[in-house]
Image (tube, rainbow, N blue to C red; front, side, top):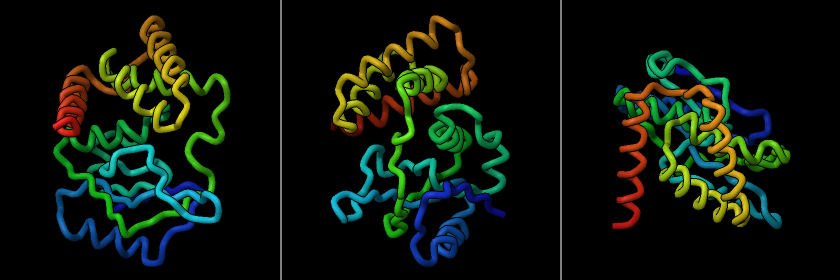
Length: 192
């Protein structure tokens, strides 16, 4: 059994669902599957390159039902589309992305965000228990990818507000340790 979460502003490639089913059937340890988001720019569809190639965008995610239940479903909070994958890995499920699944995203990520939303990314990093160092690095990377370096400050302010306000976490302390270790390993791998 599989669960699929889709936004309404997508154009799926032909055989999208057949490909997702085939991915899940290929390995019983695959907990999540998806493709890549493409956005229209000057009449061309280009890869929306805001995340790593092993991350499935929140606009279109497919879950093996057992994995979905083990991670506790979707969290009603900013960062839900990162915490689901991290918990998937925490519980030893595999996350698979297929480059052939090119999903056209009609409304690019973040186009609906307002002034208060700019702090939510930092608060989300806090809720995932990233800690100050990983949050700083992730915030800088995201701000630079968006070509808006000053967003770094907004993200850090959001993180600090969440920390000072003792906002609830989305993960346990054990899961947080796993997440930090996983993030540091990924950063180290990119540097080597």
